[in-house]
Amino acid sequence: MKRKRLVVALITLLLMFTALFVYRYANYRNNIYYYDTQVDYDYEFKESNLIILDYLDNSVTIPEDIGEGFTAFLKVTVQATFKGKWSTPSVEISNGDKSVLEYFEDGAKGFRYLNISNLLTEGETRLNFSANSLRINNQDAELIYFKNEPLDDKRILVIGTHPDDAEIAAYGIYSQYSNVFVLNIKSGESGPFKYDEVYTDSILHYRKKGQLRTWNSISVPLLGGVHHDSILNFAYYSNLEKMYKKKSQEFPATFTKATDINVYRKQNFSFLKDSITGSSNWEDMVKNLQIIVSHVKPDVIVTPYPALDAHKEHQYTTIALMEALKADSISEGELYLYSNHYIINEHYPYGNSGGTMPLPPNFSNAIYFKRIYSHPLGLNRQKDKLFALEAMHDLRPDTEWRFGEQALRKAFQTAKTEMFNGDNSYFKRALRSNELFFVVPIADIYDADVVEKLITEIPDPAW
Image (cartoon, rainbow, N blue to C red):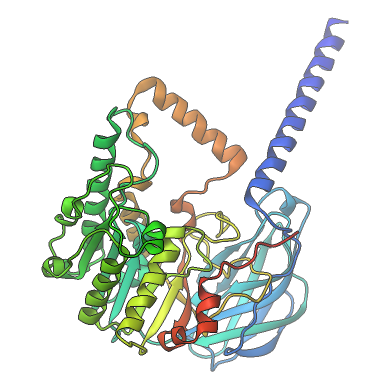
C-alpha cells in the first residue's frame, strides 16, 4: 500500500512538473513571438535579380556567374517538425568544408529566406542542406541576389547612438577596412541603476556610468584597428526625442541633471574634438553631424533604420543625420541601415550565436531598400567582436555578482531566464557569421515618400 501511494505521489509530481513546464514554455513562446510563426515572410525585391532553381534531395546548385561578391538568399518553404515546435529548428547549409547554420522560430512554417551569401564561390556552387527539427521538401526555390559594392576603397562613417551600438551592428565592417570613422552620439549615462551595489547615490552612479560608457565608445574601436583620430563621441546626455521636439531648447542630463555638455565630451582625444561645439540641443547636434560628414566625406554611412529599430533614440539619430545631409545638399553615397532592436521582435535573430543573420520577419512589403548587403564575419573576427562587446561595461553582468548571496541569486535568475525566457543578450544576437544592412542611396532621402517609408515604423502583424 505504501509503495502504491509513493508511485501515485511521484506520478502526481511528474504531471504537475510537466504541466508547469508546458505552461511556462507557452509563456516563453508568447514572450518571444508576437506573430504567427506559421505565416510566410513577405519581401518585395524591386531591384534584385531572381532565378528559379531546383531544390532536390536537400541540395541546390548555384549558377557559376553568382559567386563571391554577391549577397544571396534562397526562398524556400519550410515546416518545423513536431520536435521543432518545442525546440528551435535549424538548417546547416554547406559547401565543401564551409558551412553556415540558420535558425528559425519554434514551429516555423511557410516561406523563409536562407542567407547563403557566405557560401558562394567562384564557379558553380553546390549547396547541401541538413535540417534539424525542420522539413524542406523538394520544390522550386527562388534565388534572390544582389551585387555587392566593394568597400576596400570606400570612406565609411559608422554611427552608433549609444556606446556599443556601432559594435553590435558593424564591428565586422569597421574592423576590416582602413578608411573608417566611428561616431557615437550619446554618452550612455542613462538606463538601469546597474551598479547599485557600489553606488547608493544615483547621481554619482549615473555620472560614473556615463564616464565609463563614453570611454568604452572611444577606446573599443581601437581594438578594431580604427585610428584614434577617427573615433569620436558627441556625448549628448539628454533624450533625443525631446531635443527633436524642441529643437533650440537646451536640455540637461536626464539622470545626473548636468548642464555642462563637456562633462563627458572632454574624454575625446581625436583632433576633431575641438571642432565639436554648441550645447545639448537638436540644432547643435545637426550642425556637429554636418562637421563630421564634411570631414569624412563618406561614401557609405552605417546608421540605424528608423522604421525597423524600436529604440526611439536610434530612430532620431538617423533623422538628425538626414537633416544634416540635406542641409549641405549631399546626395552622393549610400546609407547602410541596421536594426539593433528589431521592431517586430527584439529576440531576432533566433537561435545560438554563430548562426547567420537572416532576413528578419516581415509580412507587409513595407521595408524600403534598393539592395541588401550581408557582410561576412569569419570565425576569428567573430571572436574579436566577442571581446569588443565584452569590453563594453553596459553589456557585462552588473556588480551584484561580486557579492556572495547576491551572486547566488543572480545565478538562479540567469538559469531561470535560460530555461523559460530565452537568452536575449547581444552575445547571442549579435555574434553571427555576418552583419546585415538594408542599403538606400542618399539621393533617395530627397524624396518625401521615401523618407516617410524610412521613418514610419512598419506595422505590427495583427495575428
